[in-house]
Amino acid sequence: MTNSSAARRRPGWWYPFIFVGAFGVVLIVNLFFMASAIRTFSGISTENAYEKGLNFNERAEQVRAQERLGWTVKAEVQPSREGRPHSADIIVSVTGKDGRPVTGLQVTAAFVRPTVAGHDSASSFVEQGEGRYKAAVSLDLGGQWDMSVTAKRGDDAYWIAQRVYLP
Image (cartoon, rainbow, N blue to C red):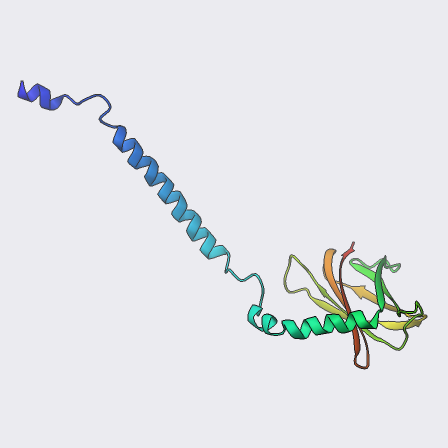
């Protein structure tokens, strides 16, 4: 009787192994996801965040000075007529508080590809008269670009950012 009762197991003896196995699978999956997250994301969402934070007051003063200027700056993207791929004519119009064109500005633009690093570009604009400035831009890739336009005259500066699309 001792041999037969020792050899016989109770029904459901394997239930604890199901729980241990399920928790083991969850633990392995969580460790995999943690390792993937650590390897693929550095945690940096803003380059030089500390320095940018220190310069916050300076940037806020620039925004207030820009508002005091009262300029209205508009950027318009027109497809290039030359038929070159990924090119366009960008026309920037600047008017003052009184609605009159602002002339004699030095206008530049920086183009940053939001999804692919290493294709950034910059352009200078040529004054066309009546507060209009034009640049013929040809970029490496078609699609969406982040364009930052700066218009300066002496100590006065105005900055706008706009997302543009080049075919």
